[in-house]
Image (cartoon, rainbow, N blue to C red; front, side):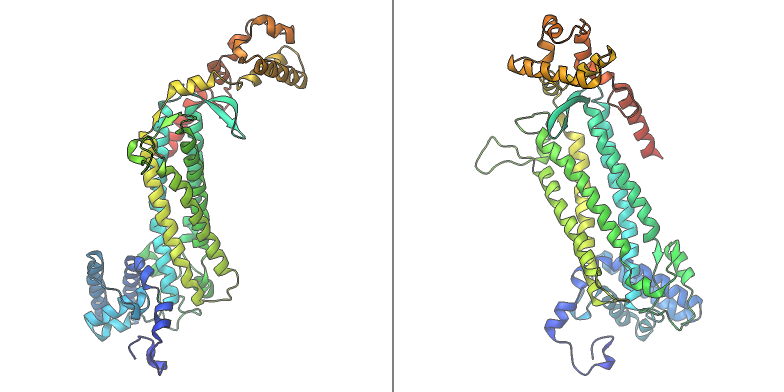
Length: 458
């Protein structure tokens, strides 16, 4: 039999079964991790005297050679060899002879593949954290330029209160900061070593799992072999965090789409991040933020897909677990691609300050400040709220804004109004007086930006 496991079988694998069960088309992405795990494993086998050290050294030499071939794209991975583990082991045996068959002593593909994915996600998680920091830096740089730039703040997509545009942007900084925290915390569970658990019950060989953990840089060794080979919580956690990150990216993308529309014109995206229409020459379409918004759905699907695979699995390893990788790879690639585009798109967008200023002076988003004004004069808030509602209705019916009303008109609604009401209603004053910690006042926004810069430098 041609299979490395074929001794018990009397027939060749059906070709359709071979193609259906093979995972090499996607798990070849784990080649680097698979070789790294094998190098640590064989080093331990040699040190523990489980295989002769000369064989261990020969195997390591062969693995390094295969690693170079993989890096140079000189390896043709074969479907008939099923997966990345069997492909590399077969290459090793072809390269160094029967000694290569000793590499698999004391391990199974079950603990081997789990180790590969732990190694892969550890690397990718750290890389995604760096990409998140690039986006955060881009947000900070735009915020610094727009502390005094005012924009309508919205609730229910209706104008609510004016805010600093920097304050609005920095809200996303803190979303991504929480995402980083989640990723950093997830590393505690990614940093568990499954290798040495065997197929499910451990091994009869006197292996040293702690030595392998040391060689691979793992903090913890799984204390239960059945859990080690069947655990995919660490992937679920990553997919969940990835979905949350994409949710934040999607929310920001939605705002960029809205802000760059003809109706808003608050920002203009750089031409290099937009496309045109094949029929309408005037169009400048925000395709990148639209796609970022759209790709969020696939990360949700990857999470739900793996949850569904796992929900009915008995211990320990089951072939269903082969379905854990494609969604993980896809979410990694989606996050990497999205974050790499988002940072420069934020950096290069033009903020139309004049348009924002015009918008903030042509609405009723300063109405709350009249209520606060009357409350300070002694009127209960609920009565003040009713008065302001009537003033806004009157202004709308008169085709005016609050700053357009004359003093006599204000006094007609309440004798508590004095001429300082116009200072109170000025948009820059409305923003400046919201000077509580975390508020939109320029003083607080500057403090917030400094706090954010400290987070990135720590």
